Structure formats: C-alpha cells, structure tokens
Picture (spheres, rainbow, N blue to C red):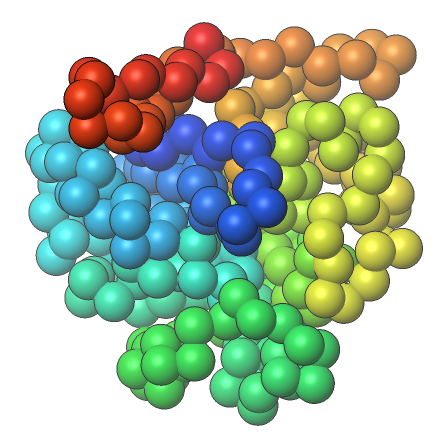
Length: 242
C-alpha cells in the first residue's frame, strides 16, 4: 500500500460575520504514493496563498491528480477551475448541483457559473469508495445532501468539510447550517467519533478526539487581519486564534 500523508495548506477559521460568509475553509493536500489529491480548494480570495503553498510543496496546478470537493459551496470548490484534473464529489452532491436542487433548497452558496464549467470533469464517488489506497470516502449528509469526507484510514484522520464546521459546534452537538438535514448532525458526529482519532473540520483547526467527549487542538495558527479604519493612522492588526 502506498504511504499516505497529509498537509494542511490553508487552515479553516471559525469566525462568522453579520456581513455574510467569510468562506475561510480548510484546504488539505493528501499524498498517496505518487498521487497528489487536494481536498477542498478554498474560495477565490484564497487563490494566491493556495498557489504559493502548493509551490512550496514543489507542485503546480497541473501536478494535482484529483480534486475532492466535500460539497459544492463556493468556499470549498471555487478554485477547482484552476486545476486540470477531475473533480470528485459524491453522487448525491453531483445531482444537487447539476439538477439545480440547490435552488429549491434556497441554497445561495452554490456558484452557478461553475456548475456547467465543471460538469464534464465531475467524477462521482460514493460512501465507502476507495479514492486511493488508504483513503476512503465517507458520506456525511446534512449541511448539503451530498456532503462527503475523506478518511485516511491508517492515520485515523477524517477530513470532514462542513459536516463538522468547527469544534464549537462539534463539542456542543450543534448542527452546521443545513440546507438538507440538521437532524443528521448527531448521527454524523457519533460516526465520526467512532471512526476517527483526528478531525480536520471545514472551518477550524484540526483537533484530536479525547475520551469523555473532549477535544484537543492539534495546532493553533495565528490569523492576522489588518484593519484600514483611519487614513491618518497605520493599519490596526487584529489577531485571531493564536
């Protein structure tokens, strides 16, 4: 079996805004032998740092073997357009996007122009499918009907997309915002605890699962914002997480 490793290129940030969704999701590079698999892509605002971090890994967009999108929301799939490889989504999510089910669900986060652009490159995968040796697809519906994670079996690491949006939701048993079924969240959380030792959420730092329902963050990166509030003064830094 090929050796499997992963590297978080962009760390998700658990922050909300009254202005709207910020869309800072986790983007993870998974290597399985010679295969380079990207789990989620981030949004357009993430494009420059994503390319920089791929380059730091010795990779260009043409070197990706497969993009796996946890679901079809803009902040997880928008940068799929810069890669040449196929884009894998669950069969259920593929229907959700291609058959415009998201319109009936009043889901404003599916990028409409990207659906036809990617349609010929979409590859369907189902719960339990082996994406690469040691890497298995896990259906986690709720946030959208076809939300899907990837389990790195030997490492016990589960990349969840927004099935686990952040540790705050997970520990409290709160469902993520749901365009399909908020009631599915408790079952998803239970299954996740059974199959994983480490969770990489859609919008938070990775965390380890401990006995008794507690968690321990695996990393605590700093996110810095620069606020240009007054032209007479220097920008004010705002630090998150670290």
